[in-house]
Image (cartoon, rainbow, N blue to C red):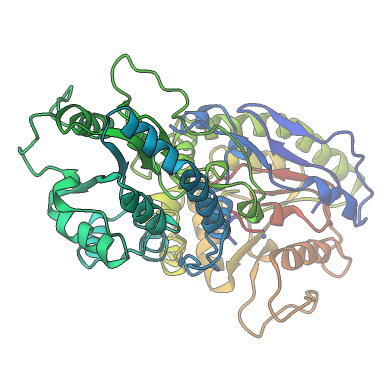
Length: 539
């Protein structure tokens, strides 16, 4: 559902093909509010996620961190109020960076003295992006978590990056102490001058051109870099450069600092320091025969759906957004194009299991109620309940919702059916239940939505039983909201109450089906069926 609870526990996805029904909670009588049962209608907060996305094959939709909740958690962590701009003064990220650099500074003198006593020339190697220069505002306000090389080059050449919090004082103190400071970045040779200039502009004293390494241009690969293929991996480039610093230039790299594990893998440093960064993930295979399990991302996470865990979890405890995107892609069978597999995927398998489990129960309930003359009905949401939005959300919008583009998709009736749902809805209708739609789409999209539903095989949705959000000034009399702008739960639950009222027709909503918990909360349905959807979250 892109735009909106029952009286008993919801059906929520667990592992693929396995759905957990809160059957210990009794169903309430028709018309009861059942507020206490809404307590079960809440997203997962514990997640297991492999950084490469492979857990999308097994975790189930509810077991994948919802991307909107991940974005909100990242925003809270960086003190971003929703503008895409980080708080430059105070945030959990700034506090964590301060704690890391404070700890390093406490041992800096001892490390320096030990290296000198051993006859070494002590050095520190630092990455650029999100190690010495802070990219959050570019990544979020400008790029919306969708990397664009042209925009990145604009920021680089115009030297727009602020310093990473606490790092200027740390690097300058190390330089003053006698450490040789090296820069080692994945930025290209054409960006070297601007990068060193940006570093100087924001207060770093130590970075010099001859000790600042960037990726080479074209065929100018340094002789000290050897790679397994024509295209070097990040680890081959960075580890090979550190080897060059130690073995050819004669330094001892006491500390190697980076925000990516690929900045640190491959050896040639006495100590690696991983700085937090949940805003992107740049993996790279380690060197052949080298195993460094300590240089691996976390796989267990606790995340509140409202983003509040960004206050407490630390950067490594927040699901990395690139890993989340990859996990979602695997779940939907998306090969990287933003287009879901329409034939076979973990998502399709999970929906098939849900439908198989629910069809027998629901059709039986419909037949029994119809024989009793109680006017049974099943309510269905639209987006990602009956119509499938993945290709719009990902290929078109890149997980950045655009109302204008959404309206183009709606008016052109481009959405395919949610897998298996036309047959599921048909079975409900054939068993004697009225089929009713309630969507958060607007009144101006109603006709196109009904047309799209008919186009992809739904025969049972009809105008009189299809509810959309009203046009401005046309709020129905049966809807009462706490403020001028109704919440999704106020709109959908009161619409269900209206459907069940004698004034409308006295239907008994035996089940309410939706992909968002806000579709399901608020009562006026005997039970809720939650469909999986990690691609957005509408609380």
